[in-house]
Amino acid sequence: MRLEANGLSFSYSRRDVLSDISFTIEDGRSLALLGRNGSGKTTLLRLLLGFLKPDEGEVLIDGRNAEEMTGRERARCIAYIPQSSSSVYAYSVLEMVMMGCAPALSIFQKPGKADREKAEEALETLGIQDLGRRSVNAISGGERQLALIARALTQNARILLLDEPTSSLDYSNQLLVMETLEKLRDRGYSILFSTHNPEQALMNATDVLILQHHRLSFLGKPEGLLDGEKLEKLYGRGLCIKRVNTGENERIICIPR
Ligand code: ADP
Image (tube, rainbow, N blue to C red):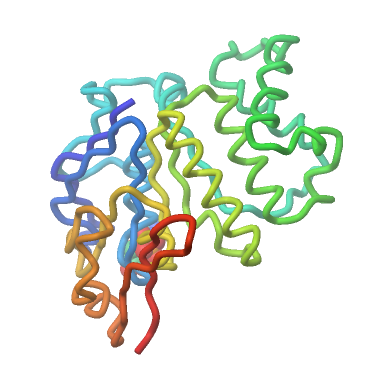
């Protein structure tokens, strides 16, 4: 499913936060969103989700203006995956993942057998089928992040938006979440994730968007950042960006000078 932002501009009480942002994410592509704190990443995600209305521009989902869609229709196309955090309610992982079925149910309808099977299938896709009965508060942050992704898959949406999905995770869970996103992308999902780690943008995304001074300062493939200039300007630091052959594949890495 194609997600398109066309000339999006937004201001909070006349303070410009985003100006003229345009990009497209096609099926099987992933876009990493980079920007310093306060650059408007969360605001952009909220515009794409329809939680905020742009001052100018539009969001198109498979060519259809998202503003003309109901909340339920949008939820069947776009799923938002928040940062992993513990819940005040001790749901089981399976119960939480089944909540992804809600947009497809009527107000008084309870999830049924087919919904349970769909949730179990999503857990299996993410390789966490053994966690179904565990409480969401009794699993690791990385496992919880995978469970949140499973909930999004149960929602049946083909566009996944993630706000800093690895922010509180240890290194091995960061890799696990990023590799999971790569697998979903290869299965045709359209993915957008924000991150403070430039290496995730260089290594794990097909495209990168940099937000700076309210504007889009770069949109293109990770290879377009190899000269270092854009990322050095963004972070105000000397950086060495290189292609490295790991023996198994080629990766682009970023090291401070
Ligand atoms: P990021 O996610 O990149 O850190 P945000 O989108 O959260 O950036 O914020 C962009 C700018 O908008 C910041 O300057 C922030 O202070 C401001 N901002 C965010 N939310 C609000 C709000 N509800 N009201 C007013 N200003 C806000």
